[in-house]
Length: 192
Image 1 (cartoon, rainbow, N blue to C red):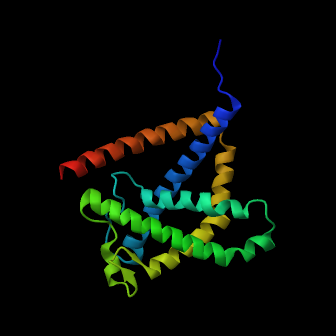
Image 2 (image 1 turned 135 degrees about the vertical axis):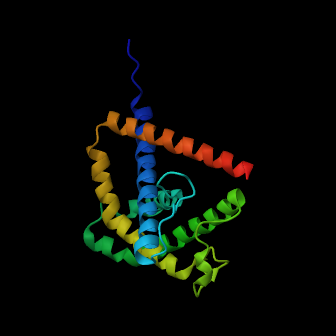
Image 3 (image 1 turned 60 degrees about the vertical axis):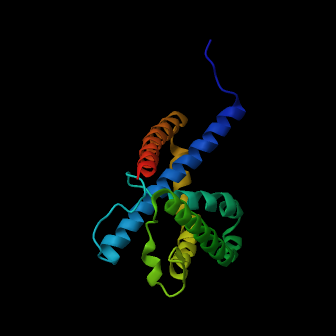
C-alpha cells in the first residue's frame, strides 16, 4: 500500500517549496546584481559579494520573501488601474522593509563575523552607521516595484509550469547545498 500525503499536507509542502525556491532565486539574483555593480558600474574588480561560499546573497532572498508576504497579495487579481495606483505605496513599503532587513542583516553579520559586507555606505551622504543609506533604500524601493510587477509574475509562471516532483527535488537539492554552505559558514565564524 503506497502512502500518499493528505491534500492539506501536500499544499503546505508546495507552499514551502515555492517560497524556498523564490528565496534561492532572489538570493542568486541579488548576488549577480551585487557583482554587476562591483565589476561593471564601480569597477572595483570581482569579489564574492555574499557572506556564504556559494553565488547567493541571502539578504536579497529574505527581502524578496518579505515583499511576497507583505505586498504581493495586494496586486493579485486586481485590474491594472488599481495596480498602478498602488505603485507609490509599494515603492515606500519596499524601500522601508528592505532597509530594515539590511539593517538587521548588518547587525547579524557583525555579530557572526565581526563585520558586514557593505561598509561602503559610510561615504554616502545620508547613512546610519554606514549600515544603511538613503540612496540604496531608494534603489530597494524601485527594485521592489519591478520585483512585484514584473519579475515575480514571471517566476510564478516558471514555478507553476514545473511538475510537482521536479519542483520538490529541486527545492531539496538546493536546500542541501545551501544548508551545507551555512554549516561551513557558521563553523568558520565560530572558530575565528
